[in-house]
Length: 107
Image (cartoon, rainbow, N blue to C red; front, side):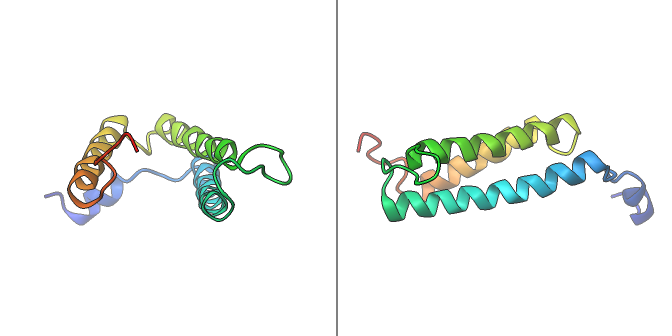
């Protein structure tokens, strides 16, 4: 294990682009939460009052916004795509064990 000072020197430095991307990612994640709430409250196919898009379409747009910011963080070296894929696979394994999401997928 590296000494504490060596760990501090090797830390990724915050720059304005990273800071802005993190701020926007936080906002977009909140917008995904809002849209999920609307899907559950009003239904997946109901039309959003302002955009005239279905809540499913709005959810897709919000998740797309999140993915665009993840791409920026990958470009900046904050997120490593191999580690991201490994995290995704770990989550899928946990979901298969602890949730019903992979049972009866045709429903």
